Image (cartoon, rainbow over all chains, first blue to last red; front, side, top):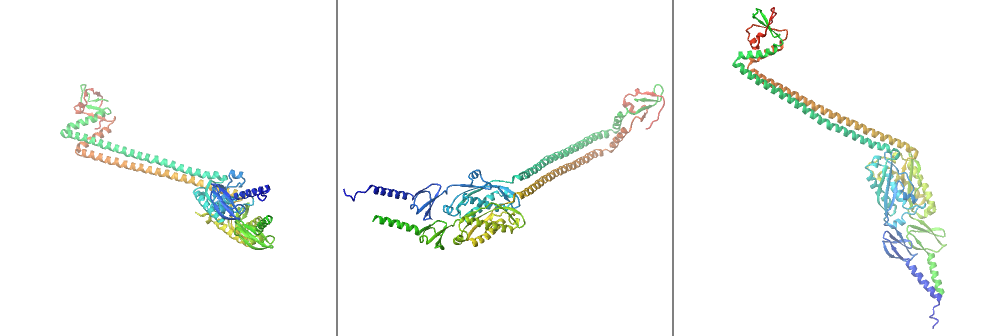
Amino acid sequence: MSSARRISRPVAAGALLLVAGLVWWATTGIWTIQQNEHGVVLTFGGVSRVVPPGMHFTLPAPFEQVLRVPTGEVRQVTVGLASEEELLAEQFEADEPEWLTGDTNIVTLTMVVQYRIGEPEEYLFGVAERLDGRSRDLLVRQVVEGALTQLVSGMTIDEALGAGKPRIQREAKSAAQAQLDELGMGVTLLSANISEAAPPSQVLSAFNDVASASADRERMLSQADGYRRERIPQARAESRDIVNSAKGRAEKLVSEATGRAAAFRALAGEYQSDPELTRKRLLFEALRSVFDRVRVRVLGADADGNSVYRIGR
Amino acid sequence: MKKLLLVLIAGTALLAWACTFQVRESEAVIVTRFGDPQRTVSEPGLHFKWPAPVDLLVRVDGRVHVLDPEASEYLTRDKKNLMVNWFAAWSVADPERFVARLGDTEIAAARLQDAIAAEVGSVLGAHDFEDLVSVADGATPDQTALADVNREITELAGARVREDFGVELTVARVKRLNFPTQSKQNVFRRMQAERQRIADELREQGREEAEKLRSDANLEADRLIAEAEQEAVTIEGEARARALEILNQAQGSDRDLMEFLQLLDTLESALDEDDVFVLPPDHWLLEALGDPSAGVPEPAPEESPD
């Protein structure tokens, strides 16, 4: 056995250790990027590339390093009021959701903003972490808040609570996105929705009264309209009756007259054929009813020799 | 021999370590030679230098930092008290000046906050309340009066911090604007009064319009009936005329008879119990009455009209 060939135990162990160390060192360059994230590769501290989900190889540390960024995660922030989770996580402070409107009124408004990390590289190196330890993402809320303050300061309270809500959502989102892009935060806003918009609780009843006053007005108008709908047909019916009964009376007059005319013509016929007799007959008929009322005396002698005697009364 | 190799490797590694440095992304590194700043490296990656203590490094964070102090009260030109919450975003523009004037990020934050707060105060104090809050139909956030004031703040504060500290101010603007709690009560009172006025107006409007509808309806109804009555009068009048015409036509065919009948009518209505009929015994009327013998003799003759 040649002594040159024999490798001593400590050396063999050392070599094995070295190989193991090298292998381990090499594996620090193997990375699996998950589905909902991207990897930012730093080469000697500077960004060399951004890699999508999957398996990737880099130079081992400390030459190259991969920072994982959760690009697939949808994050949410509430502007105006902290949500319960946010309060629990002690990430945001509770707030009064009050905003000044252009006509110097106060509205309460709460908006929920959803966003995701759009530019992984920008997100990591654009905006620094906060000194007070809270999340960097607080800036999203602050930017949206600023946009809302500006926007609502130009609106009337009626617009902000009513027809202006879609506009608030649309324009706050677009102005905030522009500002975030200017700041280089690498964040993409997905949606900005008003979750609550109301007058402050101290004046809520006065505002509600306006709504009920509007309802009252509607009610009064519809009642008056109802009255009109009854009255006019009623009047029409009445006027129809008036005209119809007049027509009835008119007919009666004419038919009466026609009847009398016919009677007269008949009588005239009689009269013309025998005037004397007709006169007597008519006179007799006329007086017959009268004879109950008047006194009748007859001239001339009767069997007893009296000159006047009476008939009837 | 092996030992020499080992020493050589170790030595090279040591040398490499001492003569190189990494510049991280968004970082600026000032290389000082014996304390004096020599060059500023912003390019990320690996760079070379002389080993310490010849070349020393000062690292400057080049990212955007956010300042976000608590709200405080500010006064406008027209003496309105407002609670204003502002925020600002800054980054290092001139690393050497920054290090010379401010040092590090933490110290910088405090100094910058004071400087910007002062600018915010002076800009707000130079504007009336209505320059900040006023209705602008359809204005986008960047078109409002407040946006103009924000731009003014950013510009003025930006110029100052660039000059003084070598800092780039991306934005400094009002995040929230409100009245202090004491003043809010007045605002709420005014809001209530305004709503009450609107409610009263609506109800009054309702009353007036309803009244008008009702009286218009009554007018219309009266008109319809008056028209009908008018028509009725006409119809009856025409009928009366027609009836008269019919009668006249008939009676006109025999005027004697008509006169005789009229005479009879007159007689009938004129006679009453005071009147006496004196008749000769052979008068045809007595016969016609049918019972002359029912007569009773009278003692004396009486007056007789005829």
